[in-house]
Length: 302
Length: 242
Image (cartoon, rainbow over the protein chains, first blue to last red):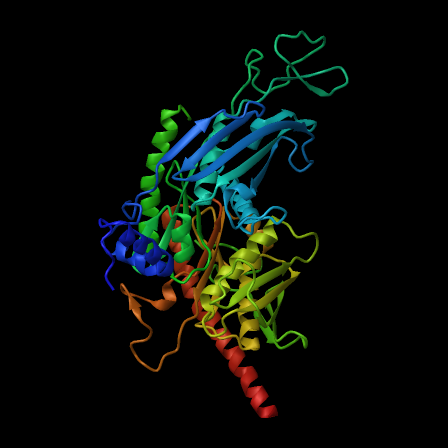
């Protein structure tokens, strides 16, 4: 059954849409045989990526990342807390990934999406594994006070490759983060200093007191991720929701700036991953890491 | 330069395996799987009528419920449930019983390292006990990377904590075929070399990951042989009783 030529009148265009809905796999395979995807991308090409920083004024650090239509908003708030006795010199990061009903028609209010806690855990594992953040930098007074960072990532539009966009927004938010200035007051409690006010018996207890200026975290080893679909002999990089729903084998490769593998995540799926497919996915991830590095570099991140 | 493991095993040696099936009476299939001290109980109920919401009604649907030994259910358990559900979906034949739901319940009895692979193996054994149609078994193994670059298989909890990185790998089981050619070849590799599921933690180089995969593949042969022996044994016992 040949695909109708879409350059003809409206009635034929309706047929293409109907074909896309009724025979989605054949519609995609027809494109894959020409090494293209319905949106005109090459198989190994990711969608356009945009990163914006500092959008949420009430947060200590925030970023918006868009990969194609997938939009993630990340925001960090810092709070002072007592570190645990096992690690008195380390702060803590609490990461939460939310999928509000705005992001997708399948998410209903009151019933959390299945994917949300899984992506949340994968993100915290990835950020921890990569060693991007040195928790010792978050220490204020050893054993008594340390910073706790609450990172919330909101999915505003779920159009495939949620993990990639969420990781990118988290990394950008951390780069935008400015740790507030605090002082130790008489009672031994940490209080925030608000611009120019003179606190009596204030002693700056930050590790690197840079003249009462807000400081940024040093980010080493930034992780970059790429999700691919394995379908027969094809490997599609950066899938959309439509592609993910038809072809169910997803592979996520996370590489860091020194080309080490932070994570290779494949969760079931009809296609098996052979060594050749793994190598191709890693190659695509390397190219993608260079692209994203350039995008972040243009915004003076790291 | 050999690695000294506390319990005296070689790097490629697995802990003693034990599997018993049909241990619970209410579930349609059940199995208990232990690797050393890690023990997991799996129960299968199904197929039950009706697919779940948002699931494709033209295929059989699976749900996994993971119960930890202690504590409340959190993100860790949800992630394990999702990984197991997708792994089970890829090994079972989904077209035989459309519009049905099969529940797999995993109860952790004791966690001494390599918990997720143990649970996947237990779930496979329970699915076989319940008679759910499957394409092949899923054989799961944990490979970790030590500082010196050695790959160590099937670590216990202490070893897992010490290692720089580890990977949970799931492969299809090795086939015993009457034909000398064996199973279908894809670009020079046979079906049993493909990875069904892979979850990694920690930093490792790409070459180290391939090393883990190779060692994991080699170990699936002994795990598959154990599965086969175990199933044939109980078949023989039941036919004797019958």
